[in-house]
Amino acid sequence: MSKRKLTRQQRWRIEKIQAERTKRASRHDVDDDAALGAGEYGPEREGRVIAHFGRSLDVAASEDGTHTRCHLRANLESLVTGDRVIWRLGEEGSGVVVARRERENVLERPDARGLLKPVAANIDQILIVFAVEPAPHANLIDRYLVAAEATGITPVLVLNKIDLLPDDGGELKALLDRYEALGYPVVEATTQRQDGLDALHARLTERTSVFVGQSGVGKSSLIDRLLPDEALRIGALSEDSRKGTHTTTTARLYRLPSPVADDGGELIDSPGIREFGLGHLSEDEVTQGFIEFRDHLGHCRFRDCRHRQEPGCALLAAVERGDIDAARFDSYRRILASLST
Ligand SMILES: Nc1nc2c(ncn2[C@@H]2O[C@H](COP(=O)(O)OP(=O)(O)OP(=O)(O)O)[C@@H](O)[C@H]2O)c(=O)[nH]1
Ligand SMILES: [Zn+2]
Image (cartoon, rainbow, N blue to C red):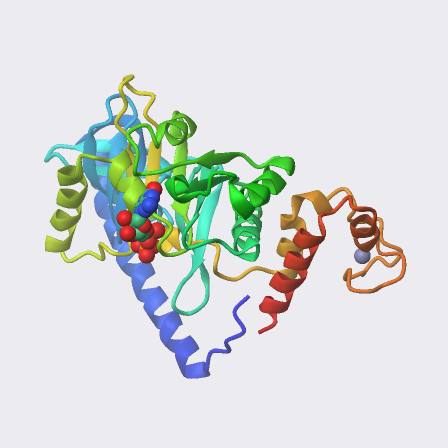
């Protein structure tokens, strides 16, 4: 969807680089084939990518969760954190990934050239964090919800810093009721109380989650509390940076510790993922992303209705009747307007 046009020279350079990559890759493959055939690798095992650095990956074995640094067979397209894979252990303690299982879903982000690139896969829920302070614009929550709906991954709203909530709940409570009425799960949290994350813990159990949300809402604070073994988390990062990898952009999968063995749930985190939702969306994705519109879409008088002021517009009629919340419809209009700027 990039509007950018490449010059002939740029195109030529990209093609040249790709040709070189393919050549290099097929050379690796010949080596791999020889090694795999010669029995230098163990039997095929299931695993999950927990971090990736170019064509190097860390894979957690499904049976016991142990980590192995693996390389990728050259004929495989690149993998992302969260991918489920088939891999084989080599003699020297490193392994090779030989196949990727089909992805249930994938999170994508535009790269520097504006092309969508996958950053993480097989996620069960997107936790959209917002807070009492800085207070959210309904518009921003809707934007995150639309982006989540476009991926097919379940969104969950997490209201953090409820220690700052006024006794009567204030406007925020009213806002939350609106989303709960639409069917979205809402979880309240605070890092300021010992039991403040109990509801969140319950929500994370047995699922793979990502946290997104605007700056200052407390994502880092929540994740610090959920993964208290900071040495493990930071240690893993500094080991990567010694190897000169981009620690700030790579996504990592963490197993959450739990009092009950093995039901702890998993978290995939990276700065790129935290910013998810603020990137490109198409007009159709925005329209489909307002879930309460779905029943009405297709019932406008004009097939190409854009739901502005067309006569016989089913959406406008639903707003008029009160079946669609006027504030949500207003938010829809604003998000659409922001697409064209
Ligand atoms: N009162 C209160 N403050 C909190 C709570 N959680 C986090 N904070 C504070 O909110 C501020 C921002 O928290 P961060 O965890 O850095 O927020 P973030 O979402 O990671 O922000 P970015 O890193 O900018 O994306 C910090 O000063 C935290 O101490 C909470 O539950 N209650
Ligand atoms: Zn319409």
